[in-house]
Length: 384
Ligand SMILES: [Zn+2]
Image (tube, rainbow, N blue to C red; front, side, top):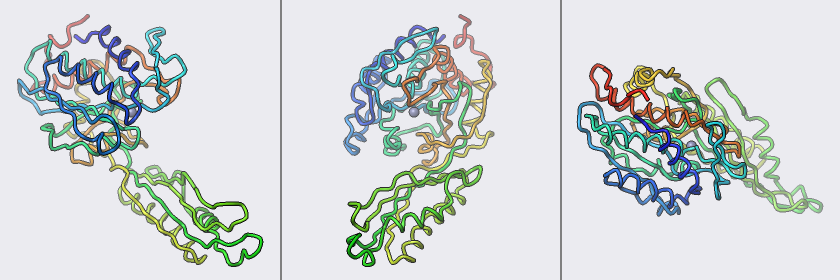
């Protein structure tokens, strides 16, 4: 059975290791040590070199000893700031930071659940399908580790990411694709007091474009935002240059195309009308996530959750995670709610019960995947 004390000890240890994006070396080494101690061959890719970080994605495989589809499980090694000298504090079976940093349950709670499941595989020593684990870097800074991960290494064709803030038992099976938009507007500089008529204000072009733009919640499936505007040089100069950054997201690929085209057109039209120039670039930040509840990856998770008395909840999100990237690579991937609360804040916390239940859920998935009839295998779940 999963061991609560062991899980808590490991969670506190991992949270205490500072690991902002690009600076995951220490935690990557710690996770590698655990994997090696479990007798696994561990690999690390060169993503860090490419993206300027000091660690790559860490991955390992436990070869199958029984029937069932190979599965992968993934969590990210990095956290947001502030994460210098995290001091985890346990109060009434809930783990918090000391209030001066984030805790890092996002996503160290996911990491410990995966590590505990691997320990269980070894300790129980029952037939199981192949299990692969991927610990990614630089998730918070734009899913960079997952995007650079070579999925050709995987034998698993479906998997699970542990990185949603929903309650344990919740499963994100729908999330929007996300386009980034950057518009560089070129006007004409001129002295604002002497000869303003010789100038073309890039700020006014931006204002006209944005004023016409549909932004915010476009429909139940689609959102759009202009996030930053930078430009101009001084109060007495007609601004020549403005750089605008924005985004659009939609669960529906066609709506995303339409909204993105609309935003581009607003910039281009306003520029043309005012004698300016607009250089607009759009790029796919990450692909969408759209799984049918009947797909094996979802059905298996639902069955596994139910088997341990959890109430599975299939959910849609407005955010993105490594699961989007894996799905985009053709690997159906569910993102699990792991019970972490108030993530990305100094009040971040997680209940010990959730850390434990998440490990049990992963064990249940592996067990269900390997059993033809979903029958009980007492060794996995002896009552404590
Ligand atoms: Zn996360």
